[in-house]
Length: 160
Image 1 (cartoon, rainbow, N blue to C red):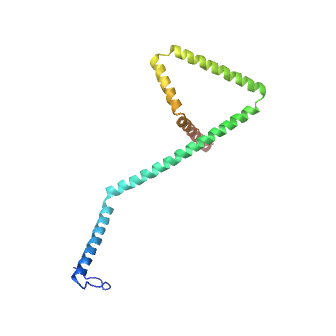
Image 2: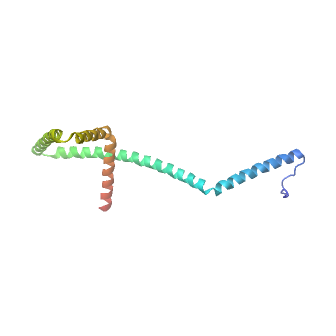
Image 3: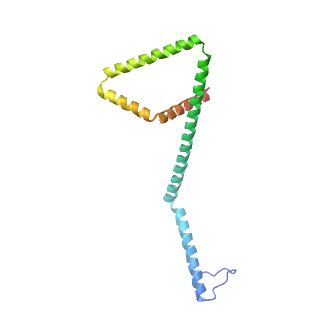
């Protein structure tokens, strides 16, 4: 057994000695647990992986939020530019564009009717299901499209 340091008083009674022994045992147990935890590589790796995963989830949420905001900004900017371009068009060109748009809508409606008549039933059902899915998830599709446009613009700027 080792000698106590000179600056610590020794026990004066058996009760004090028992308390010192218990305290030493507790400290030794904590030290052993700490050392065991440090040497448990698998547990430390799992803790680090969980920490990294949590950080990745937070960063992904942050980036998703930024993408949604950027998509909204780009949408607003595109609408503004479209209005500016439309306002700068001469009246004859604007009228011609409106006529072309109306003709395109009419042809699209005609194509839709033709599709309804000619397409097989399973294909029409799948198409209707896809259209419903797109309608139900319009915000997600718009956000994804906005993000894709943002990525495309960023890549285009880097190349140019």
